[in-house]
Amino acid sequence: MQPKVHRGRLTAEGFRFAIVASRWNDFLTSKLVDGALDALQSLGANESSIEIFMVPGSFELPLTAMKVAQSGKFDAVIAIGVVIRGETPHFDYVAGEAAKGIGNVSMQTGVPVLFGVVTANTLEQAINRSGVKSGNKGYEAAMSAVEIVNLYSEIGDRNEELGSKEKAFPHVV
Image 1: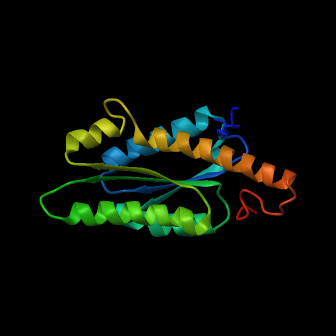
Image 2: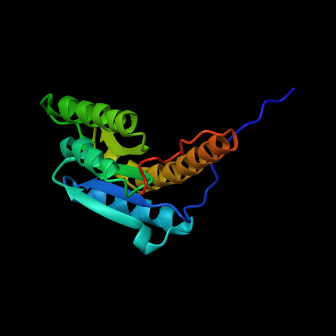
């Protein structure tokens, strides 16, 4: 016997996305934002279904993501930033709080918040993960956002079939 496997489709049509991006390390975060936009647009999102919110640094990502998620205007939030280790423990605090906070936003709001924050030990590692040389974590986070909103939509459709009054996105007006 094979269980039914559910996977989100890769189509952004009909969904709304917010990108919350840090301005700190902008020469890299701008590449991550570009990657996220490329992914969303290649999967059918139109310009009017995407909004970008800029914050000073990665430490400010969680609260802004929370406010955006609570607005009820978006199906998913993509958090983007770059934190590079320095000579002090500042990296540990910023990276740790950003990761923990972003995860908490999803759990508290029910809105998926995708982690597109590059945490690197060196500038070279950050460059490699920001699409300057190869992979782009912003692109990957946006692809995951599209997949997860489609999966949650399917779960909501199934709940309706079973008679549940709850929807996959009760926050969306």
